[in-house]
Length: 72
Image (tube, rainbow, N blue to C red; front, side, top):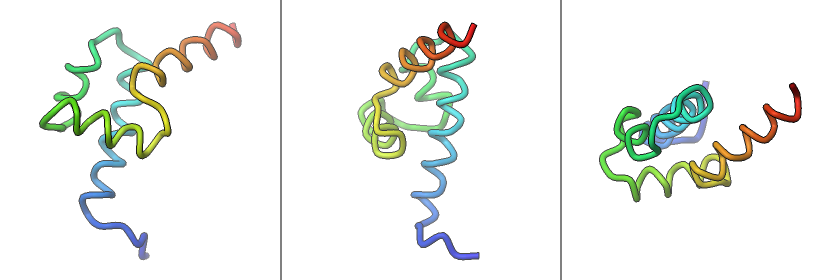
């Protein structure tokens, strides 16, 4: 199976996916989640996160919290 992605691109997508889960399920700071997910710098994390999701980590968390409140 070919994804046409480099190993690093694939790894970053996995890390961002893990960060998404952490942003939804914890109240940890974005910077702590960044390091928990294996990113070395916050600026790199923000750039990669936005490339994958189209949102910053804070925007993502806010949007998911709003969606959760609407569904309750």
